[in-house]
Length: 294
Image (cartoon, rainbow, N blue to C red):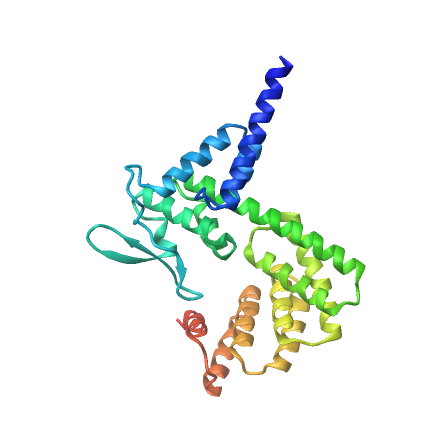
């Protein structure tokens, strides 16, 4: 009996090695995250990877996949994918891509994301996690779990480096930047999120005590607003405003601050002052202001 278990173990190791080599040499047309499926789901994981590779490489009928071109970001606000059919092509906003009435197209889109850089499409993956297609949900959730694991590992490395060199400003700056990036992804929840937001407050304040920076004050204010610490958030907004007065970043920050506290009169006064000063605003800021003016 022990020989059977040993044989199965060796077979599983062989499957893992073949999968790793296939991913590394790009023989297998799958994302690197799928290696963990093979490692933690013996045999069935390897079979799933082979089926997935076949699905991506063909359209089940042996023809080369020409259904979905490379996903691209057109702007910070509007993201689009190009979907081509036999008759014509159309550009579909990524917010609507998951609503396409074709499970095949939805799965091709999610695989394009996984084979590109999932960290750039976290918002898309979060929406995909609520999709009615169970396969799309599986891929999206698996990707988000792996992104979270990678983030945790990197944060641990930064914590180790910062503890070893507490006076190294470069390490502190990189630590703050990466932690803020993790927080804005929205993958942290509950006490873990609160703990990391409090950690960010501590780190960015240390950084600001060494060198003032408008972006750090803005991110600090946003973080404090999420923690509902409105008194300190107001103080951070004032310090940011001292560095960049009459800027759209401050206007948007104040709008968020006033709206959270329900200060309608202050919002009205801010909009009037903005209009009088004729401050240059981006389209995003104009849309935010138009929302409060209506």
